[in-house]
Length: 574
Image (cartoon, rainbow, N blue to C red; front, side):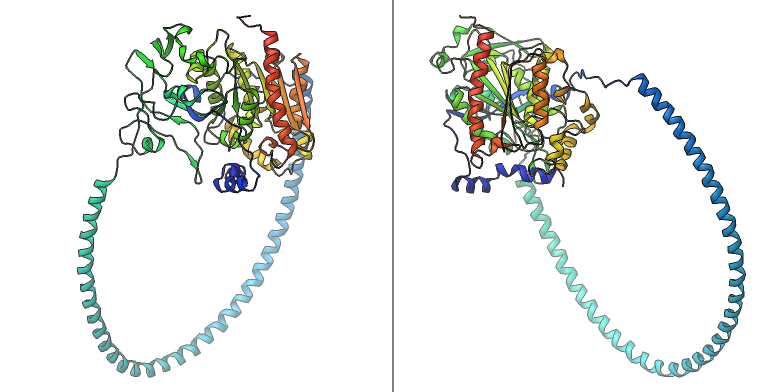
């Protein structure tokens, strides 16, 4: 079993043939009605994606008593080893002497045998030689006559072969000339598909793909620069096929594959950067100015966003959900989770932005986490919220972050980084069967359900190796890898949290430990445990009725988180 096998199994949720039959047979969840369902691209820089964040975890220190005891034990072990080595040497020496004596006796016997054999062999050779000489004389006379006849026949055959070779050479020379002419014509007809540059504002040279869905608004209100094709304002809107087949040097898709499938979810650009100082965002009718290193400042007040006045009642609670999908960091995408996140959008009335982060092992830690964190920081800017077609209010938008499995791990890590960088903290978290401990240390749940069909022991080791890479040793103490090792100071700043898990999940202990740590630090936390539900049950609502109930429960938990946040943080307008 390897990562390709894991991907092939888990990616069945996105297979077109499987989806076709699942829909026709009633196994696929129907999508809730959405006004917006589109891909957008959030700009950032290569340096931020590849940069290792500040790791605050400290390796556990060893007690002095343990160190002294180990030293004593090591000394005793060394003495025992030396004594054993001496005894082995003595025994080996004795055995070697005995072997030498036996070898001498054997050599004497062998010499006597060899002498007898030599005499017998010489006599046999003499007799055989005499017989051979008699036979040779008889054969010579016969062979002379036969050789003359064979030589004549061979000469005739060689002449025929030479004539055939001359004919073939003439044909091959004609074919080579024709092929060279055809190649020259084909090379002239080949299109130039090498594309390297893109024109992006400031220092942006990397785009993160996201799925944006919303129960209100229209796609026309979304900033065209976030969509396909409007990356270069001089060329206008373009389709993905036009970009990939273009020869004007607009866009370079960074494609890295394992097997036959693309695994690079984000897009990297080489070069680029606009020379203009002012840019107009036509969709939002806002003028922005650049100053310093890629910073932008609005030159207009909130009143200038008249285009959003009609939508002020569509999102009264001023909230957005950031979703980070699961899949062990090695597979799946927002599309494989679209069924239940669309249900959440319809239930809550909140827009949802789902990050399609780059998968491992093509991009190991901290790359996927950095991509998710960059999208979160992008949402904290009111100007970017307006670019999504969401009305701007005086209060900052409330960002709810959610994720399942590996996405639950990065949901917690994004929050830890927001606390570490002293920026806006999420209004609430919902983590579904999260991975909170990535160290090789086992737990009761992982041992009991080690043969789980979805997430068994071998599969877990494969995905962790792909994601952690050279940082596997830090998983036992670093909170940005294993959130269960976060310090009390970090957890005290956490928002309200909802945890959901199934009681037959190998990661049930990860959720339990997280719940205990949050409660110990007085964080208001809900922990929902659903009976007989396995790992990944949010993707199986049609097969497991309890899973659909869990999806509905989470939709109401989002509203609960916003209500609790509003109580603790009264609005500026109230």
